[in-house]
Amino acid sequence: MSDLRLRVSGTTDLTPTVRRFVLRDPGGSALPAYDPGAHIVVTTPAGHRRSYSLVDPDGAQPREYVVCVRRDSGGRGGSVSLHDDVAVDADLVVSPPVNRFPLRPSPRYLFIAGGIGITPLRAMVRRLRGQGRTGVRLLYLTRSAEETPFLEEFDGPEDTVHHSDDRGLLDLWPYLAVPDDDVRIYCCGPAPLVRAVQALTAHWRISRIHVEEFAAPHSGMSAPFTAVWAPDGRRVDVPAHLSLLAALRRDGVPVASSCEAGVCGTCRLAVLGGEVEHRDSVSTGGERLSSVVACVSRARSAEIVVGPYDGGSP
Ligand code: FES
Image (cartoon, rainbow, N blue to C red):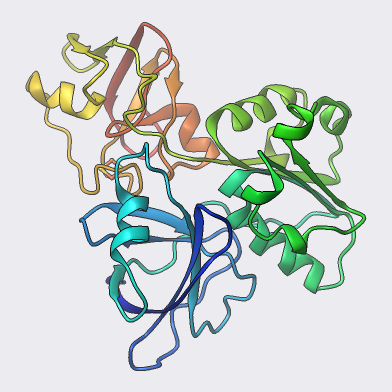
């Protein structure tokens, strides 16, 4: 399905840094359907392509898409462009909805949101509670009440909203210590939170754990590493300032790409050795076990062995 040109019909500041954008077809037509967990890829006025989760729970016959964007002045400019360059009545090019973080059936759920990671989880929690479901527990971790979008929606008996500025980091272990096959865990947030949840649920059945991590491409925390191109054993130095994709190309390895922002998956490579620091927002849990999105992700180990990706059987 091709991209859509949608009009911004309204904006609301939910917090000092989070703005809600409502997008509609200029002619009033219905939009492609979606389920909770879906995102759209928005092309900003400055030309960045960024994924944003659809925050509303009912996407069966949507007349509008609603996304919430946190302005990250230390980022690469996508969120700043949306905040600073987009007003009501502006037109934006967006992809049709894509869902790589679908809500699976389960007797009960534990949702863990970190900051703006609430966006896909809000759609899921509201969908389930709107169906009258109980056993839909939410842990919502933010810095402060002021920086907590949708705070007023989550004050029920199954909600825990925790502000680290007031009370330090929340100890997640009491919530995760006992594995339960009747519970699915969905976590969305920054990489340290997602990694903590993955580490603390290592004793759970892996099919019960669903995570979506924010991309943090080219962050200042990058370290250099070596990539070995498996087909010919070529060793490629990847310095801190260069992506794996760019370093491979510099040394003559042809790798296809499209968005170069970790949202389309075109540049995916098979991983045959080493440990990956995933920074993309396109991979499923299974894909993360065997592949790397070369435009944004990096090696966590000193060396990584990569090769062409053929869909999961390297
Ligand atoms: S080129 Fe789109 S994810 Fe890398």
